[in-house]
Amino acid sequence: MAESKSVNLTKRATYELRQRIIHGGLPGGTRLYEVALSEDLQISRTPVREAMSRLAEEGLLERAPGGGFQVRSFTLRDVTDAIELRGVLEGTAARLAAEQGAEPRALAEIGTILDRLDACFATGTVGAIDFDGYSELNAQFHTRLAELCQSPVILRELERVKSLPFASPSAFVLGSNENARSYHSLVVAQVQHRAMVQAIERREGARAEAIAREHARIARANLESTFVTDAQTPEAMPGIALIVREGRSA
Amino acid sequence: MAESKSVNLTKRATYELRQRIIHGGLPGGTRLYEVALSEDLQISRTPVREAMSRLAEEGLLERAPGGGFQVRSFTLRDVTDAIELRGVLEGTAARLAAEQGAEPRALAEIGTILDRLDACFATGTVGAIDFDGYSELNAQFHTRLAELCQSPVILRELERVKSLPFASPSAFVLGSNENARSYHSLVVAQVQHRAMVQAIERREGARAEAIAREHARIARANLESTFVTDAQTPEAMPGIALIVREGRSA
DNA sequence: GTCTTCGGGAATGTATACATTCACTGTATA
DNA sequence: TATACAGTGAATGTATACATTCCCGAAGAC
Image (tube, rainbow over all chains, first blue to last red; front, side, top):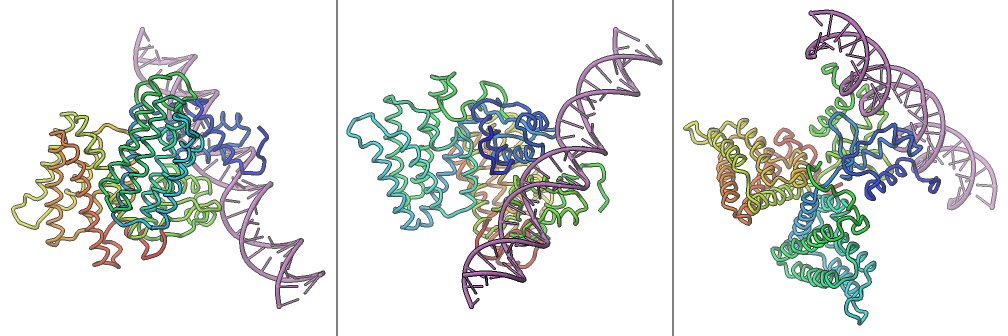
């Protein structure tokens, strides 16, 4: 509890609340009461309120009709739409990069990331993958790719969508345990990574966009099978606790 | 000043700040100081802070590095990207609606709006248009269209993009004075409106998406010519005061 | 019995005093 | 003369008292 005394209380409250939401401590739809939270966190109402405001900006909370906040809840449909949306936005970023031409230096850096992603497979043993390394490099790749179009507006909205834990490009990597299906997913994903960069280099905008969209659908398929198979394992994927079984979304 | 006494101070501060930002009273990049604003608005720091937080959520302000807020500024590139983004999102909504099938009742309602849009032209005189009526109906059309795909996630992000005054679907209507070019713009736009609905009815997803994107580019072209022609008239388009001449965006 | 009204409590809204942090400036010392 | 340290001020961060609003339940009247 008394771990980080130096940072300000707003950040502490924001972090603590985010953790509780993502890990299921505060299920979707839960109304958050300032006084109760203040007493619970041992932080006064002002920073708690500020934290809730930031989490609303982040998309994890929503403002309740008559004031106050509640935890945003997501149906399976919402989650697939968010992933689809990420694909659409990444596709747009890739298309714009192809159309206006990407900086050679930035492309070279992405090439380096691609090589290092390849290295995650290269253990000689089929099926053996450095999942953690892949996940980290994958996140880097997606960030760099989005930056290629040099559009702060696109980048901002993309970051926003990716901030939902289940919509992040690396969410499906963590969710995959070491079975044949997930191995094949990563093989296909990496082929798509290279194809996207190639399309951008060749100024093939439509191709770059289409691949980016299809690439996101790997995550969608992975989510759906994860959700069906390990329906009750909360550790299967980050933020899966946010997904409500049925009914209305936020 | 002492107009609406009943509503709470947060809303008053939010409204007042938004007005000042949109109309150029607070140019892009301006740092907002809580104390100064409090004294200026005659409202204490707490609601002012809350108002700034909401405007940041809305996209008109951004959080400054060391705390506090500043008015977000947009380059011409940012604005065109925002319009492009709206086209991409509306295109996605239209495609999804086409793919999954739209509700007949909702389609019928949109048909009514289309007829009423036609009526804005039907004065017999070529070139005479009910601009205000068209603008209002146009906004309704775009909202209804986005709702056809029944995706709260898509709808939410689209509303977010549209909240930037210059990226709203009706921004270009207001910006157009009664010249031949703007008349032709509205004629083309209305043809595209009908084509989008037809494509959705016929489950032609790719066509619906493509038209929605091209539709948004009317606004883009209109913005660019407005920006070049009437470069110094702040009333030419809502939110044009947010656009900074050169340099970095937020 | 039902409807209306009044009261109380709990929630957010507001004001403000106080704390903290950071940057700038001036002075003193090396 | 340059650098470092300390002081001062202004900004945001925090705590908390008080205001307001709204819902809900109980009691009374029709």
